[in-house]
Length: 140
Image 1 (spheres, rainbow, N blue to C red):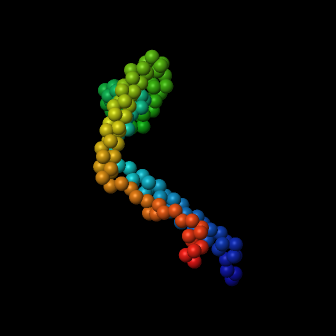
Image 2 (cartoon, rainbow, N blue to C red):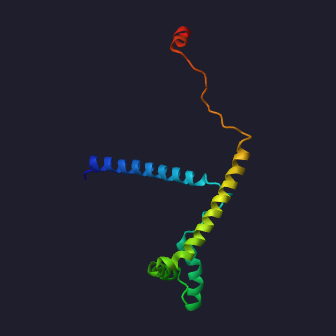
Image 3 (spheres, helix red, strand yellow):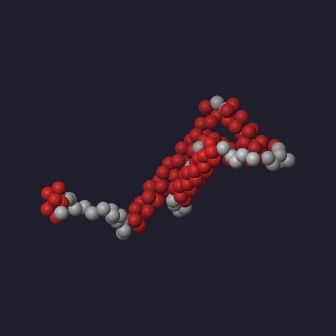
């Protein structure tokens, strides 16, 4: 019996190397996501999600037996698309108001964060000394 061809072994090796790189990239993404501050204010909903808050209530009243989240989302999306700009205006205004509140909360949060961080200034690992070529040659 013949053994596996050399090209197929090389191909498997490349696949395993690619998988390691992908896993390393995925771990890097997870680390970046974990650096978010849990005390930060939550982002405000868009106009559509403000609309969906009201729509969910009316949909549950009209269809109490339908408990599928997907059905509510699809029906809400269809209604949102069918609405005119004047019908969407109150939801857009509510979303803008929530966004303004969020921006104020973020400014306050950043101010507190900077006040706490100001006690410990970040220092670079590199020295701030300037080295001339003449000094380097003299020391050699």
